[in-house]
Length: 262
Ligand code: NCD
Image (tube, rainbow, N blue to C red; front, side, top):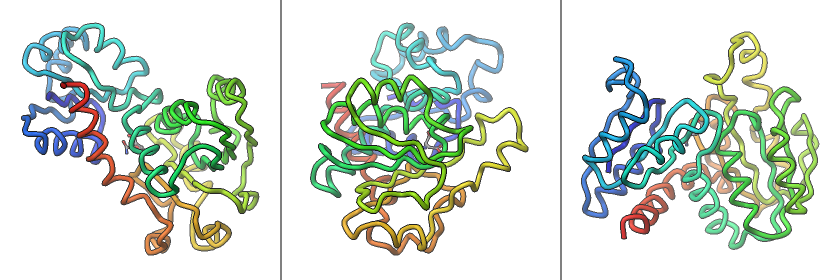
């Protein structure tokens, strides 16, 4: 497996690599591919991928441009897995997120989910919504400042699925019967205006005051990294599922690689 990462990663790259090694396979890798590959010399993504696909049986790619993984897949002779294409999608995160919900709650149909944070740029949110669209009767609260609300396309998707949602801009209005609170980081790297990022980065902070309103069986998720939007004091709460969630990434990616490579 070749892991080709043009954007930073801790969980996604390490868990893919650990997954492949646990399956008995090997890994060739480049982090900071923008600096340490021929991209720096001006090579196109397509040419790089065409060459790398001659050296590996699968390619896992993370790249800052929306649609990059799809372009890579067209150029590649081996399967390409999207590990994040800019503010677009992050489908393998969605798989581990859905797996975690099912493990922790016992089912996915009928749950109420609060999506909190940067719903505009958060690719994990986008992919998770599409995956949850495979289930039935979900309800959503979209908790974000106006500037970071969910793009229309995804809201249209929820409408088409018949899923009810409300858009709110404060955690004070969080429903007490929420099953899953899914918190995200404000995506600094997607902002052209750093003052705007500074204004919005801690718009929400989930602390014990917030979690005290959630029911006993609720869970708190986050794709990580967090940069202050969940207070460390929440970590001891048995409902804090984010580190278990990150661990699940290993198992889900093992299953995915085994599936793809037969
Ligand atoms: C996420 C990502 O890269 O989109 N991280 C991850 O893969 N777990 C979330 C983020 O960076 O905020």
